[in-house]
Image 1 (cartoon, rainbow over the protein chains, first blue to last red):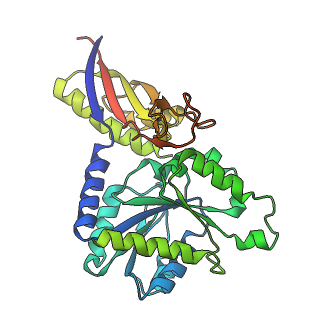
Image 2 (cartoon, chains in turn green, purple):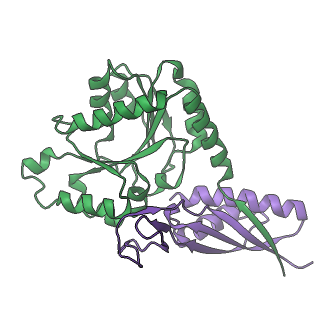
Image 3 (spheres, one colour):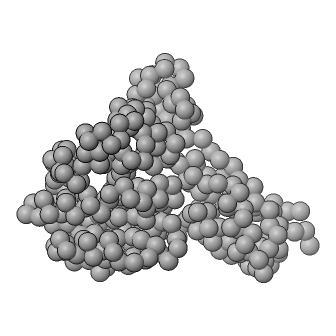
Length: 222
Length: 114
């Protein structure tokens, strides 16, 4: 038997596209954020509220990733923001090549910020770089406060943690969710992570998130 | 199940190397950082399924998981991170910076002797 040293990157095809995407976004001074969470955590609701509130401050475009349907893209379209839907037909994550195709379809000259709403999944999307400037992980209180401990990779890699549906805490509907535990577990792996407890439904806590976005988008414009 | 995507890319790279040498590959060693969250069983299953009928059919995969490293901001120690207790083993500080994850790498291919 003969062993041969290869030392080749297995995901080099994806990396090539991710690198191209990152360069395209930097050249166009667009901040790009890759949003990752379990299904049903409220990503699309966060986006529609954010777009409506920041309408006159930042021009936002959205790339929607779903296994099938364009239900989410329809919800974004109602805000008048430009949106491109990608259907992965079974794949549990978006690839950089898919994002590259979607970027070509967005009016990039008019945009300051592009959100990529990844396929709802807390594991697989964290393995693939898309060319984004940062990852945003969303955890809704209904999922439980143990998720940062159980799914460490995505919390370790993200710039921002949005703890959504905190209106359920106030209503007593989710009184076993220990928000301090979720925060502490996320910070244990990622001291620099920004954490914003929010309710995209009532608007509570959203101002801090908007301010972070405005500041970050401005930095990308420099 | 992003292991299917990894398996597809892996099959392409190994097939490419085998075609260059015109020998049948029978084993491969890959390594990856922990943040790729690769499940060995899922990857081997996916590879077995998609390599059927190709030059890689029956190929044995060996997967090495590289630990995540961090640098302590207090004492500058570099250490392997244990997710359940990620503090610096030297000074016990919790202020550390994760170092970039090891890439997903095809390290070595084992070819059949002529």
